[in-house]
Structure formats: C-alpha cells, structure tokens
Image (cartoon, rainbow, N blue to C red; front, side, top):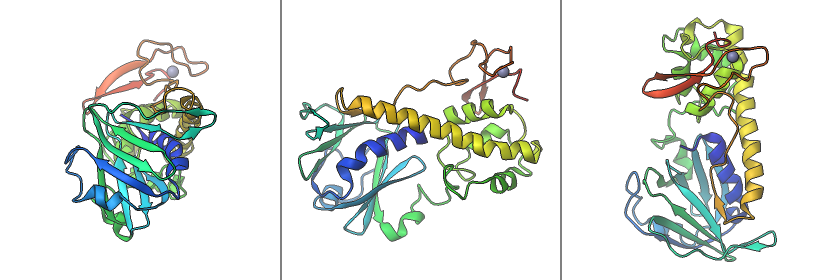
Length: 283
Ligand SMILES: [Zn+2]
C-alpha cells in the first residue's frame, strides 16, 4: 500500500510531465475502479491544461484549467508508467497495452501516462477546485504531517484524553493525514514509544517528540524515493514503489537497531494489522 512518501515520489516523477501541459487525449477503459469514475471523465480531461500537480495526504491532485481538480488515489497495486517522453538521454517507447491499463493520458508533446491497477483499489474523481476540501475523501482530514499546522502543541492536544493505543491514534486520518502502518511503526520505534501505550497517557514532552520524528521518517523516505526516481529513468519508465530500509517495519526477529539496545524486533497484531516494535526500548 503506498503511503505518503511513495505518493509524493510519484507526484515528483509526474510533475515534469504534467505541470503546465495540456492533456491531449484521455482514454478511460472501464467505468470504474474502486468507485465509478465521474460521468464523462475522458471528455472532461481531454483538452484540459494541468495548472499544478499537488498532493493531499495520499491523494494526487491535478488542478485543471477547466476549474476542476482531478483527485487520484493509486490504490494498493496501482502502477504509473511514463512513456514516449525524452527523459535525460533515454526514450521509453510506448509499451504494448496491458490488461489492466485502465486510464491512459496522452500529454501534449508526446508523453503518455498509463495507470495500471490490477486489483482496482485505485480511484479517480473530478470536483470543482473551489469545492475540493468538501470532497468526501478529503473532508475532515487532519493536517499534513510535513506542513506547519502539524506542530507539537497540536499533537499533544489531539492525543489528550484519548483511550486508544498511540498506534491507532496516529493512524486516525483526522489526527494527521497520510500516515499508514509502515511509517507509524517506524516513527514509534524511533521515538521509543510503545505502540500499545494509551495515547492520552503519554507525557506531553514525549508526545511532542513524535512531531519531529514523524517529519524525519517521512522526509528520509521521500529522499530515498528521490534516488529511486533518478534510477527509474534508466529502467522502464515505471514510477514504482521504491525499496526503503526500515528499522522496525517487517523486521520481526531481527536485532533492534537502536544504539545501546539489545532487544529483538517483535510483531504483534493491533486492529487486524501487524505492528513491528522493540519491547525493550519502546516503553
Ligand atoms: Zn530496541
């Protein structure tokens, strides 16, 4: 499942192809993905200029010259391919159409963006840009973890009185937008806070310490994504979900990497999802 850093990496890969460019032709090959596409989506996209490709939480947002914004969620298995554009000294020929190529955007100048999503958990929708924040996928989202509104006093206040485990509180998209299982595990490990600890019972200074840790974990992953972007240009044009070295996530049984800690990373299940943490140094 792509989380915020992966979506941001895809955004950075797509931005040079889309920003300021006209969608010469949009081809929509089925009526729906996770939800039905908006009525006449291909026609509404064709001829529109992309003013800016942004991101909110795990959603790509393309503001269009038509006054609408395209909301795009990559889903679980979505792949984005760029072809036909000169990328450095390489040119990726348009690939042969594949079975799960659901949306194909031909951009003025010759680039093609193909969205392939075998499991169809992805989504696209269109809404008037001035009503964007009222869209059901975006309404009520908490602040961006890398934005200014997400600061120490805010997080301390939001956790106060909460009876849920801290892991569940950080996964709550109303508290902070875009954090998922992987980066919550990583942030709690780095902060030395047990994922089982009741959110409201964490002392304010420790709760506050999560803010810079969350920012660091995400910023490092975005940086790693930037390196993978430089690589993709030399492979097949796919904006893949890069491999990133995690300290806790997916490392059950491995020695804890925290310096001075002799613990072993363990795995528990919380709300039906795996939590990786070190019982030794996360209290
Ligand atoms: Zn440890």
